[in-house]
Length: 149
Image (cartoon, rainbow, N blue to C red):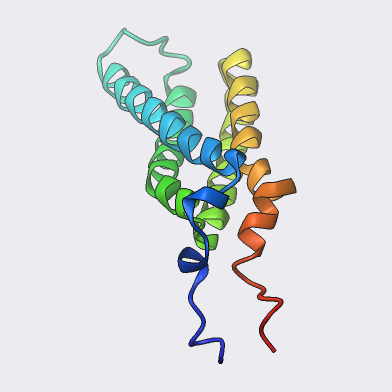
């Protein structure tokens, strides 16, 4: 059987053998994406109203907010792919988490240290389980088939 004839990773993997850590990451993607989307839109609206946010920090807050908005959309978009075991979704989660990490660092250094540190922790908690341990092994099975010669 040629590589083109073999079923893709989605067809070989069922929900029953998906590690709990992968399911948790998918749910975390949806949850974090939803919360960050809501908060980002709220902050953009508040920034548009003069005097609501401190004038000296409005620029920094908007930069962080736009970063979080991009991350939120990415997490929401790929949550289902992670849930199904699509390797491209895992890569997009890694890229979004790297952006999330950078925005968290910027936030921690510019406006809100605690929020930035929590954001960086979330970025690591979302990406890392897909690349180590059972999560990595589950995604890795889609690329290699020991029975194929």
